[in-house]
Amino acid sequence: MKLIILKIFLLLLLVSPASAEWYIINLDTNRAVAKTNYQPDEADLQSRNEVAIFSEADIPLKEAELFQGKIQQRVKSQAEVNEDVLAEKQAAELQKIKEKMQSMAYDALVLEGSTFEAITKESFTKEVK
Image (cartoon, rainbow, N blue to C red):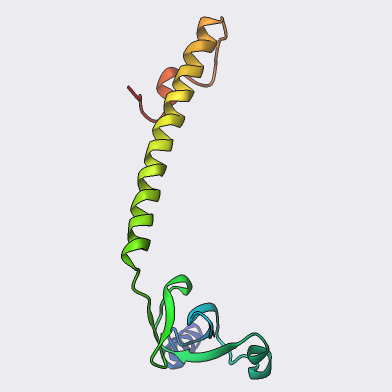
């Protein structure tokens, strides 16, 4: 019985589509705004200036766009790449500030006479100099 169930399960895996989906595209921007595994209602889409495009490509929603009638992965502009680099640098610098503030706050509280049972100076992820 287990063997029959296993064979049926494997058969279902083989015949089901891997990642085919409908991408809902905003026609003002040609960017994907949603994905679904069923064909959406055309009248509803038209009311929002959207269209549904079927694709077997498995592209993350934020990276999908309509180009020459097909769904493709959007290439970031140089300005977007620069923004991403800046955001990563800002996040790293803010993390340094956070860690330094925690360390300074700990030191100040110890100087004031506070005692801690659950944390030590080494509890912080790394010492910021």
